[in-house]
Length: 248
Image (cartoon, rainbow, N blue to C red):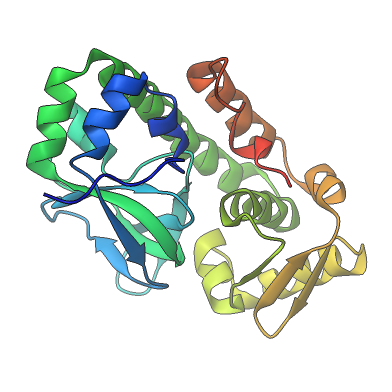
């Protein structure tokens, strides 16, 4: 059996559990390091592990065909990958790609099911998280339909900034175009506009957030809506208020 990860836990869902439940859960976890561009799940495939990122983050991608795809969610240390198991569904609905390399906690499916059965507190927390994740999916669908690319890019950069725990991260034009569902020229125009306003620096795939507050002002309302839902469903006296609370 894997050794219990040392505290602090590093994942806010698990950190919010009662101590006894949390410690029992952690005895069945193992620490892994997720590699950039690593594929963790594919649509229609059986889920083998659940992941609780601690210093990594994962893109959830809906594929339309072999040439078209769109990011519909992002999972960092505020969440988990494999939430469909809460509904007793062990098949992945989405392509899960590591976008930010780093540590995570991992648990095999059967021990996870056992922990769900024995811990009402875990059930409640993860059901609430599943609600948050469904809200993020719906918010992204509406965002892609109604908001301009510049505002959507600002939202995505803020979401990534929260989960990367760093002002600088690597992302290519090609990947941004895939994530936002637009052509590369659209990404170039949006990134240039944000850079001209001195909100970000972008060179050869390296993005640095220069003005967090300014980026929030440039973002569409979906970013604040996501954070408000997380705060409403998962806040506790010992927890932070949402992904946006991860500011330095």
